Amino acid sequence: MLEVEDALPLVAAEWMDAGADKPTVLVYGHLDLQLVPEPEWETNPHEAVRKGDRLYARGAADDMGGWVSHMAALRAWFEEAGTLPCNVRLVIEGEEEIGSPNLERYMDAYPDAFEADLMVLTDCEALDAGGHSGLWGGSDGGGLERRGLALHPEGRGLRGGGPGLGDLPLILDGVMDLATTAHGPNESLHLGVFRKAIAADVYLLDEIGALGKDGLG
Ligand SMILES: [Zn+2]
Image (cartoon, rainbow, N blue to C red; front, side, top):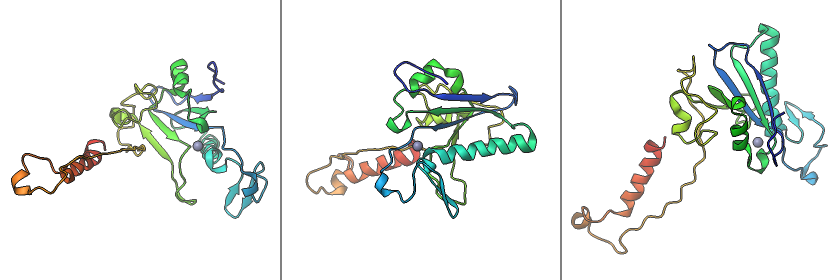
């Protein structure tokens, strides 16, 4: 249990016995849950109820289901192989639902708890109940930092060039809101005459679109 002042505790755990030559995977998730809008529940939200292939309970999707799947995977490795193929760090914070206001303070206070070659998010959409919808990203070559997605503004906690991670594709993409206002001529201008002198707003928008597609990844 890690603590910083005026913040809810953060649970961290690690298993580093795979050795220094193996990559370290950081599994991030949260233990706090959304409030329960009681009238909308057909079953007791504080008790897991199975209906067919689905489990209904408060936080089953966000974020307990993710954690259960990772815990099951870790247990299966230990039961079958007696070990893990990589080092594993777990970080379970308690303030995600209020915007993780102290996560960076935790990174500053406990940088070792976040040190990893690859990060797996338990906190993501499940696109298909029968398929895998995990999100993960690595820092190989500074990919996360380059995309502005590092957990920490300076990329702390994710070291580049992790051993054995060179071939892993980076599939963690972020959410970006881009508000664009384009100012152009306030009346129609003949393109043949004014093209070189005045940038048509439609071309500006096209350039911005290309920046989003090719420049930002
Ligand atoms: Zn969540």
